[in-house]
Image (tube, one colour):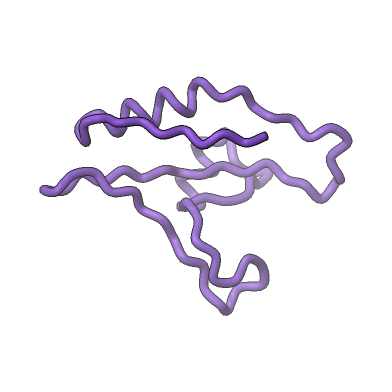
Length: 93
């Protein structure tokens, strides 16, 4: 069963709230994953503006082969040349 987590926090605390939430997650492993599954990484850009923090998303073009029109975080699949997941995220973003 999935749980919805709600929290009240001051806008200035949003980056720490996101970081703590992500750090407290236990990674889920896909057992016997098909060979076509690939590792990927995403960036959660937090923008601080006068009226508070905003989270930046991307909207995929309707011209791409996969995931047309989807809303997502910037990021993508790890390539063989990537030296780290951070490098993947920077390249893809």
